[in-house]
Amino acid sequence: MSSSAFLLLDPEPINTIGVNVLEPLLKTQGLTVTSGTDISEVPEGTRLLFIETSSTDAWGKLKEQLVNLRIKCDIVLFNLDENPEIANRALLSGIRGVFYTTDNADVLMKGIRLLLEDQLWYRREIMCNALNRMLQFNKDALHKLTDGNIEPVKLTKREKAIISLMSKGSKNKEIAEDLSISPHTVKTHLYSAFRKTKCRNRIELLSWAQQNIPDEIR
Picture 1 (cartoon, helix red, strand yellow):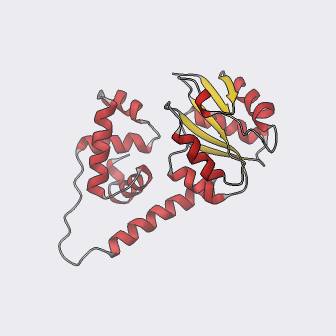
Picture 2 (cartoon, rainbow, N blue to C red):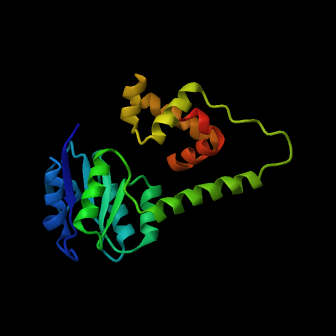
């Protein structure tokens, strides 16, 4: 597994947390750390990409940067102001975690360690908000159903196995290895599950599974 991190720094940062604090902490975890101000500089094999998100139009700038990202890696935002909407968008977009300008070294270190264990790093209220949005989505969907007979959703054994591993934080490649199938096959099964459950993303699918087949994904 790759053990390198890249810090994508703002050309005009509001502080030096990236180089003076984050970089040394990443190195204590055995990561090779490089940095730059252009996303095209991110090298192949990077495991964690930390993007400084401190500008006024933070989300707009972030989208422009990610369009030009040519490698696959876990993305983490740092130096974020107290902006819950950006954190919510980040979570729903698959970004692995968020660090704020107010986070001290202890918080950064705890988050880094969890990220290296392939877990998410978000404040509790952000996670709860995202789950509430998913629950509301499912509630609204139920209200739209007719009084006629409802055809139950039938997931295959393989689809359920993939959702179960996904609920534990596994990525497509890891799921493929666990089930001895290709990553492409994992994606095919996921798309099938999305279609059957009418879910738009992984978080909605996990929320659906927790409500409808909790015992089957444990």
